[in-house]
Structure formats: C-alpha cells, structure tokens
Length: 245
Ligand code: PGA
Image (cartoon, rainbow, N blue to C red):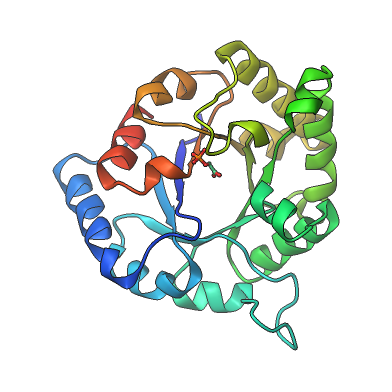
C-alpha cells in the first residue's frame, strides 16, 4: 500500500510575508498528525525561507527546474540550487509550463532526470485537453505523454500527476468513473513498462480538488494523492484535503 501524497502548488502566488501559512500548517499537523505525506511547492525564491520554517513537519518542493545543471540560462533555476535551498520534490511539465513556455515531452523528460540527478523526486504532470477527452482518446493520449515525459527516469522513483487540462483552475472535475478509468489505465501502462516500479509509483489527481470533493476522489483505486492549486493557498483548506486522504 503506497502512502498518499498531498502536494500543494502555489503557482505564482505568495510572498515572504505569507510565512504565517507555513506556521499554520505546522500547528495543524502538531495538533493532529496526518497519515499521508504533505508537500507544498511555493515559488522558488520562497523555498529556502519556507523549508527552514517547515523543518521536518512537511516537505517543500519546487514548481520547475532547468534540464541543465548550470550555465548560460538567464532566469532559470538549477535542480541543484533547488535542492540546496531545501526542496525535496520538483514539479515538471505542468500544463501551464507546457502551454506558456512551449515545453515538449522531451524537455519535461530532461527536467525530470535533472531533478533526480540533484536528489529531487520529480512529479511529472500529464493530462488531456477537452477536445482529446471528447474524442474518446484521453487514456491513450495521457499514456503516450507519460511514455515520452518519463523516458529518462525509468526504473527510478518518480510521481505522476494526472491533471486534465480543462479541470485546472476551472472548478470542473471529471466524473468519479472517468477518474477511475484514467488512473487504472495509467497504472496498467506503468506496470507494462516496469512491473515493480509501476505498481509502486504514486499517481496523483489534480484539477479543482477541494475540501468538498477530496474524500470521494482520493478513495478511487489508484488515486495515490492530489496536486492542489487554488485550494492549497489557504492552510485550512489544504489541511482539510490532506485529512481526507
Ligand atoms: P487547481 O490547480 O487545483 O487550482 O485546479 C491544480 C494544478 O494546476 O496543480
């Protein structure tokens, strides 16, 4: 039985003065410990401060890294610097990066291996568009994305986050049956590539998960946690989702 992972993605939100959220999460965990693993991914400049305050209570991660170890890449951040700042995970291939920065599956695979090489666990994001879902091809589209985006990290420990693009930040979610079908399709695909690792790899669901729908989604077979955007910005909501796991 894999331990569930509840990961918050703050995206381009948060300031040093929001440190109270970190203290509130920590206080909540001291009151009532969780059975799942908890991770918060703030913007990179906040990682060092937040990780120092989170201590051993919960993990801090990054939202992106560069695929190279160092060099002339203005504005980018290396996985090694994220690790040295206190991150233990790195999200790669979020649909907002794939869209806003034209990141291909091959680039995502490069970032995933850069994360692993620096000692970070990559969370590789995949998901279909609304057109792809309507065409009935969602599972095969997502499995093809996984093959290409994780090609560099086979046999190693990583996390998959399934995030239907049309459900991110929209309040819309797939039906429970659609989530179950996708997650079991992903599991079968991972096992076909590597029986042992495929059975252990955590598959998170992301896209408009909130306190009101978390328990139902997290109870679905092969849903091993969540990647939470909007609802992770308030410590109470984030903790409520983690308690539902
Ligand atoms: P959301 O975002 O929870 O606000 O839909 C999820 C994500 O993009 O990780």
